[in-house]
Length: 110
Image (cartoon, one colour):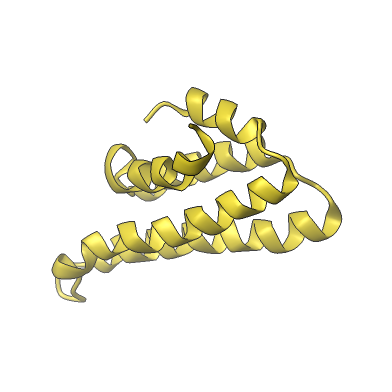
């Protein structure tokens, strides 16, 4: 997943659209995390997959809570950090994470 087209799309969104995108992204992350359910057990440590998605979701909702209240919408930097966190945590950036991001932007990139 290359972030350039995604950064371009989100940079064009107004505040209301950015909030809508963040809600969509949180929902899409939930859908993508479910792909790990069949293999998630305490025995083989596959729960790390779900933990990574949970941490990313936490970042999304924390950003929504604090940025909208403070009027600080540095969404491009937020996305770059989110992408880095996904890579560092071992979440499949080219697969499920990337799919969630792209799906969350569908209605805005037409």
